[in-house]
Image (cartoon, rainbow, N blue to C red; front, side, top):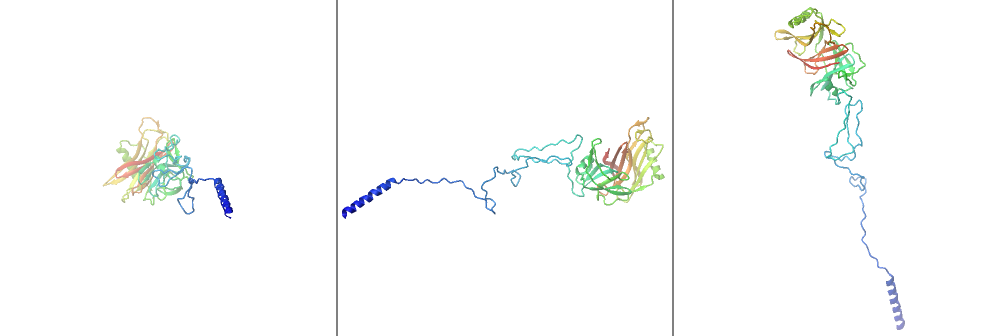
Length: 358
C-alpha cells in the first residue's frame, strides 16, 4: 500500500508540472480612453456633442453671436429709395466692411424715403394736374426746397388742394423727376379746374376768411396806379387780374393782395416797353396804408425782346407751416412753363421761403 501511494503521489506531481509548463503568461494593459460626448437630451440647453463644422464667432457690439450672414446684399430696386447692403461673408469686427455704392441716372438727386411722424411734415404742390412739388415744411427742419422735400414724400398720402373758392381731395402717387428743370412732379389722373395749392390732407384744418374781391374795383385800380407813379414808371394801362382779401396775421385786420399783369404780345414770347407783371400787398401799419411789392417785373426796353417773361398771379393765402400766420402763394406761368413762389409776411417785411418753376 505504501508503495502504491508513493507512485500515485509521484504521478500527480509530474502531471501538475506538465500542466503549469503549458499555460501562457498574459499581461494586463490599461485601456486607452475613447473620446466621448454628452448626447443632447430634450429639455437641456447646453448638451451638444458634435458642433457645427464652423463655430459662431462673437461680434463686438452684438448681444447674440450671429453665425452666418446672408451670402449677398440686397440690391437697389427701381421704385425703392434706399439701397441697403448686408456684407457677406461676415468679417472680423476689426475689419471695416465697405458699403456698396450705386450709380443713379445723371442729374437725378438721390432720394431717401423716410416718412416722418404724422402731423410734422407736409409737402406743398401746385398746379391742376400733374402737380409740381414746390417745397415743403418739416417741424424739425423748417422750410424745405423741392429737392429736399422729395425725400419725405409718401406716395400713399392723400392731399387737399385749395383755392379761395373751395378745395378738392386728390390721392397721392410716386413722384417723377424732370431732369430739364430739375424739379419733381406728382402725376395724377385728377385734373382740377384751375391751378391750386396742395398739402397733406388734414394739414390745414380750417381756412381763415380768404376771399376774392372784384378785380375792377376803381379804388384798387387807383391804388395800383399810385404805386407805379411812386416808382417813376406809369404804364399806359392798368390790368388787375385778381384781388384777394385775407387776415394774414390773424389780428382781425385784413390785408389786400393784388396781382396786375399786362403784355402787349399775348403769345408769351415777347416783351415791350410798358409790359409788367407784379404782385402787391396793401396793409395798415399804424395810421398808414402801405403798398408793398412781393414780386415785380417791369420792362422798359427800347425795342421788343424775345424774353419769355413770367406772369405772376395770386393763387391763395394759406397757413402752410401751421403757426397762425398765412403765407402768400403766387402762381407763375410762362411759355410752356408753370410754377409757384411762397412768401412769408412779417409786418412790412416779405421774404421768399420756397419756389419751383418748370
